[in-house]
Image 1 (spheres, helix red, strand yellow):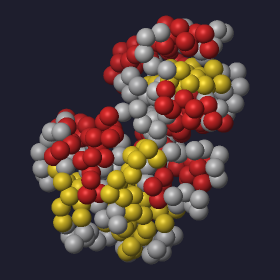
Image 2: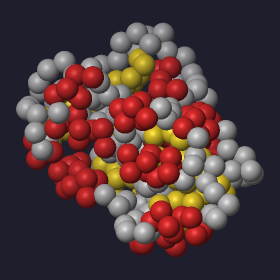
Image 3: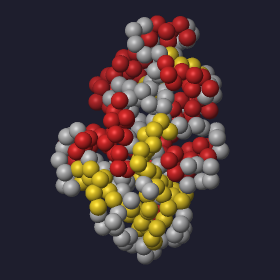
Image 4: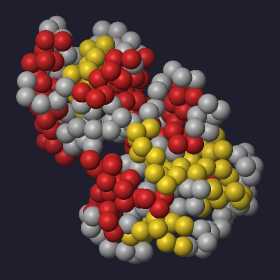
Length: 307
C-alpha cells in the first residue's frame, strides 16, 4: 500500500511515523503526483512541535500528514485539467501532504521540472525558492551594494546569496568554516560565526555594508543596525516578530510572484545557480532526516526520497 508520513500528537519529530494509507484520487482541476522527493523545511518540524504553528498553517486534526515541498511525476489527471499528461515531471508544494508516495494538487499550483534539474533539487524549491526570489527582488541589489547574508550556505541563504551576486552585488555570507570554500567558489565572501564576527565583517568591508538578508535571527538584525544599515535595507525571514519590533522588513515567500519558481528552476537547471543537497534519506528514515535538519550548519537542503 502507499505510504505517508504522519503524526498523531504534537511533540518532537520522534512522533513522526510512516504508515500505510489509501492512494488519494484527483478531483476537478487536480492531478495526482507520484512523489519521488520531498524537501524538508524548518517549518515542518515546528508544525509537529507546536499546535499554534500548526493551526497557523491550516492544521485540521489528527492524524496529520507532514511537509510541503515535493517533486515527482503526474500519475493521474482529474477532470478539467489541461497542460499536463501522465508521466510529466513536476514540482510544487502541498502543506501537510508532501511526504507521501502520492499526493493530489491543483494543476495550477504545479510547475514543470526542466531537464537538468534533479527531482531531489526540484523537491526542495517551493518554500526556499519562493522566499529567496521574493526577498532579493524586494532588496533590489545592484553593483553598488555590499550585502550581508546570514546562514549563507543554508536552504534559503544559499539561493539568496547567489541571486544577489547575480545582480552584481558584493556578498558577504556568514557560515560555518566547513562551508567557506564552497561559498568562495560561488563568489561569496565567507565569514565565520562566533566571537568577533562583527569585527571580521568590518574588516572585510571597511567602506560599510549597505543591506542585510537575514536567515538566522535577531542577532543578524541587531548586527545590521549596528553596522549602520538603514532598516528598510534589512530583511529578515528568521524572526518576523522582532523585525516588526525594530522596524526592519520581513518579506518572504508570501510575496513571491507567479513566475518566480519557473525562473529559478531554469537558472539551477542551466548551472547559473547552484542548489546543493546536504543529505538524502529514504522515507523510512524520516526521523533521522529531521534530526539532521535540526542539527543545523547545513549546505543546502535535506530531502526524503520515495522508491
